[in-house]
Amino acid sequence: MLSDWLNLTLDGSESGAREGRLASGRYVIHRPGILELVPQESRSHANACVISAGIHGNETAPIELVGDLLARLEAGLLAIGAPVLIILGNLPAIRTGQRFCTTNLNRLFRRDLAEEGDEPQRARELMATVDAFYGRHPQPRLHYDLHTAIRDSRYPRFAVEPFGDTATRPEQWRWLAAADIQAVLHQHQHSWTFSHYSKHYHQAQAFTLELGKVRAFGDNDLATLQPMRALLEALIAGTEPPATDPGNMIFFRVAHELMRESEDFALCVPDETPNFTRFEVGTRLARDGKAGDCIVSDAPLAVVFPNANVEIGARAALLARETRPPDD
Ligand SMILES: [Zn+2]
Image 1 (cartoon, rainbow, N blue to C red):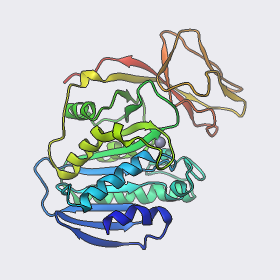
Image 2: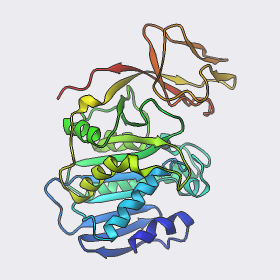
Image 3: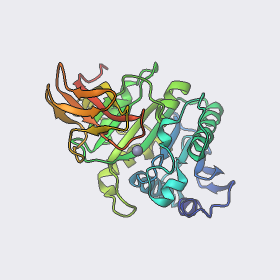
């Protein structure tokens, strides 16, 4: 049964490749944590959709949202009208409720990846799966990688637009606004996340979507995610998603990446600083034994994803400035 898949996958007893039928199509389990929905008939608005969750293992709300969608499919409340690949990213980390086991999976999605280990191996598996999926389907490509953030946020639900040559189509902003996404952060350079992979290598419309704050299974408030569920349901059904004026969202562009360069590193903003908190010119944001002090200059900066406990050479925060909404 489709609705068992999530639980069996999470407790490690999923028995490998199998498939089954639904009223509107079929599902195929390719490997642990990788499920494809195959429509009997692809609708005219269909995109080839990748919906991923659990790339960070402790981010449970998106996994519960996926569980909801599968239950509605199985109950016949939702029909498959588009090819959809559903991915649960870091299974061992999900099972132990950790962000990752050895290293952050969401920086490993590059084809020249040289690292070895469980997370690099999973990144290779997921990249190959996405390559094969997009290769099989002629529809326009789309990838929503669903997360929740470690911290509170001035905008609890926000989209990160990966850097890349592929322009984001205007309807994406209207769909995200209708899905109650409150802010958008444009990346200013390549960062090797899962959504960036689909955009960079497959020209997909792709976003990392932050859907509230990290909580344990059962503690999530899925009511706030109903508009997002409506968007995902439309994508699965291959119908036109709800749309509204993107002027309701606040747009930011990354100005700098704050990197941790030495053992002797500290952020000078409180640990619990909410995402998008604004700091005035002259504020010291970090000190680093090698890179020196990071001080806000020129114009105020908003701090996003501050995390002092990253590996040396990794990003400790994104520093962003508000920007105009994209033109239609
Ligand atoms: Zn995450």
